[in-house]
Image 1 (cartoon, rainbow, N blue to C red):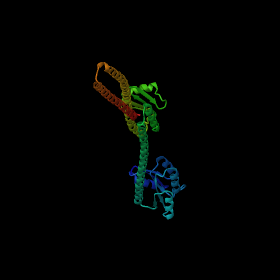
Image 2 (image 1 turned 180 degrees about the vertical axis):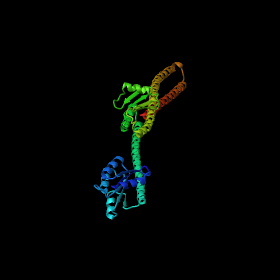
Image 3 (image 1 turned 135 degrees about the vertical axis):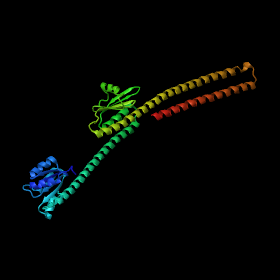
Image 4 (image 1 turned 60 degrees about the horizontal axis):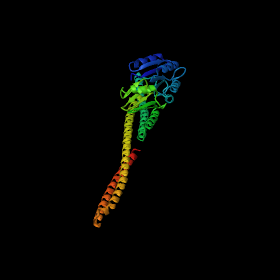
Length: 365
């Protein structure tokens, strides 16, 4: 308990010195023989325990205690000392905010025991106050952290439905505004796309900074700014709270998660665009094949009709019997039907490919 400070207030200077000598080595002691001197010492040193004589000339101990409790927080203990050992005196001491009472005359062992008891009580009270303050601070920090992660989760939810880099950047800046951060964002894949939270477009010097700082590592601080890099994405925080150690540490963790999410969504959008490009090429090929089939179908029908007419017109020149003519006619008709079945199969295949392309297109929409 050597860290506790004890202020002894009594108009008997010899009594003050005696008690101070007795407590030397256990407490830091201060002495005052008047209320005014006690107030000055209290304002300067903020003692933990006040050993206060009630019966003092001028402002008595009760009035002094009330004044100190009113002016300062109730963060100190008071032991009243009085020559009047009555119930009324003890009630006055209790009502003024006293923690214990010693009646004169007393033995030094009794006084020392009471001082030790109050010192233990004061230490426990301080410990509880410190624990309460710590718990309250941790609760506030947890609430702040939960709020930040809530904004990040909402961003990830919104990013799932983003269909373009412009839309992704919009949701990113909404989240950063909720985190009280001002940022710029750049995607640097095959093409470079840059965005600024305030101005919409990055300044030339910011464009240059993005290019220069891509190789400095995943996270790099300079002044009150922080840049985060991934393979295809970078963003610059322009007002990182570096002076707030706890908030700064939390934001470093949060932004490390954000950059990974941005990188993953960027790759997803790039793959989706690549699939759309491939699908467009396949669609063009299907349309070309379909046109070729239709053209071939029309051409074969014309050629087949011409062939039938030529064969039938030559029957009389070949001097065939009716049975022979009937035979050749059946052979020709059978061949035509088989050709029609083949053409139907090609058309069905073309239609199936078109339906498949439409389904893929619909899944990418």
